[in-house]
Image (cartoon, rainbow, N blue to C red; front, side):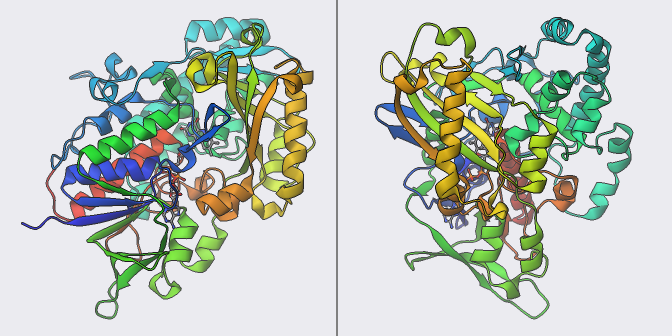
Amino acid sequence: MTRKSAVVIGSGFGGLALGIRLQSLGFDTTILEKHEQPGGRARVLRRDGFTFDMGPTVITVPHFIEELFAAQRDVPRLAEPDFALLPGSNTIDPASRCAGPATSRYVTLVPIVPFYRIYFDDGSYFDYDGDREHTRQQIALLAPGDLDGYDRFHAAALAIFERGFLKLGYTHFGSIGSMFGVLPDLLRLGALQSLFGFTSSFFASDKMRQVFSFEPLLIGGNPLNVPAIYAMIHFVEKTWGIHFAMGGTGALVSGLLHKFQDLGGVFRPNAEVAGIMTESRRRLRKPVARGVTLASGEQLQADLVASNADYAHTYRDMLPARDRLVNGNLRVKLARQSMGLVVIYFGFRAEPDDTVRLRHHNIILGPRYEGLLTDIFQRRVLSEDFSQYLHVPTLTDPALAPPGCHAAYTLIPVPNNASHIDWATEGGRLVDRVLGMLEKRGYIPRLGDRLMTRHFITPDTFQSELNSRLGNGFGLEPLLLQSAFFRPHNRSEDITNLYLVGANVQPGGGTPSVMMSAKMTARLIAADFNLSC
Ligand SMILES: Cc1cc2nc3c(=O)[nH]c(=O)nc-3n(C[C@H](O)[C@H](O)[C@H](O)COP(=O)(O)OP(=O)(O)OC[C@H]3O[C@@H](n4cnc5c(N)ncnc54)[C@H](O)[C@@H]3O)c2cc1C
């Protein structure tokens, strides 16, 4: 029997994970990547002897990664349970909390504790590590009146995690009916109100409201607007821990690419796709994807096409409007994009005191929370104040910097390009303010004297380099009306044999969800091509 062929546009986590799964389904798969490097948002910047991961740094759910590294050529394993549960129970297998044997052949994952150190503007901090007793001890110090609230929050968020993640996580909502069946449960659990509203109903202290609601910002969500179903992030982290790939997330990307190539897949860098070729069959039937045309003019035929690129870019730039009844120009235009990001990559000479204040992952909250979020997501203005996520991976892996130095990045949520902010002017000013604040407030004393290299990116970089609409940092914003059935579908409703994978489609953004989207898309493909798994 002749083998079927597949083309994947883009080599982000989603493209690589789907490529691996397609090879194991028996497709001859080619991944086409616009850039020299794989990884998309997870690509690597090397500068002046420093290695910087440009995007994801918080790696969780190691058994999703293990599934990919354990894949075998032409041996589909899509029917296996999605979550590693102990036989005959609903209890998570503790072994799934660590890197598995297949992963260890490609990359070393290590746990990071605390998960985050969260600094408040008054200088106090909260070390979040997922341990219930330790969490209670810290609440007792910072907000003793919220101890009961924490116990109630814990129970409510656990119920959401069990229903929303363990039971529904892998559901592809292809029809509106598929959503109605689950709404009563989600309503009962309070999972459809805003996360901040949900959190505020348990905690009276502003600090605790922030600690237990900021996490969706790491996948582009506004805590004031994301549905409380995102409280499950708290439990995803608590259940499987937070991990770091030695050598950086780039080492994990390289491992996934090697795995794909070991399975016989072909990776083509510097291969930007200009259009998806379609063939119209009889009237009233959907067009069929037949392959892609590269920016160079080269054409590649394939039995199926999967796009890991931005949702708007895929539909609006790669397909003619006449082929799109569902994902038409208006729908694509009206879709709300996640916030933008300014990310500053910087290297500095280490001093012994650096380890007193800094942890591997630091969240440094500014003086305002709700007001700042409203400025970023609703008013779309660049405020004088800011909050940031400061990543210092050399505290775990010194090899990422020259001896005696640290490599760091700090990420600042900002409005996306619907704001029309002039980043050519404002980007540099914001960078100076942020680095100045880290020095003055004592997070990195004398940073100006110690600085050895610096580079930054803005929403303009996301727009031009990653083809992200309005320079979004994380794809479509996670909103109730952009979730489940209302989020772009992994199987295109417009074009037969066209699939989408990654942060823009179901179930959503962040590396665990993106790996889930690859498995969901592979399942749809297996069903459409009558492959038994
Ligand atoms: C700064 C930052 C920090 C983050 N931190 C975390 C974190 O700690 N933990 C976490 O879980 N998530 C994090 N995220 C989110 C996470 O990075 C993303 O959800 C995930 O990496 C997205 O993967 P993807 O496969 O959907 O797409 P992308 O990584 O966006 O990849 C899409 C790929 O498609 C390519 N492409 C686009 N157009 C074309 C074309 N026409 N032809 C060919 N190729 C094309 C692009 O070049 C790119 O390689 C972070 C994101 C950012 C930006």
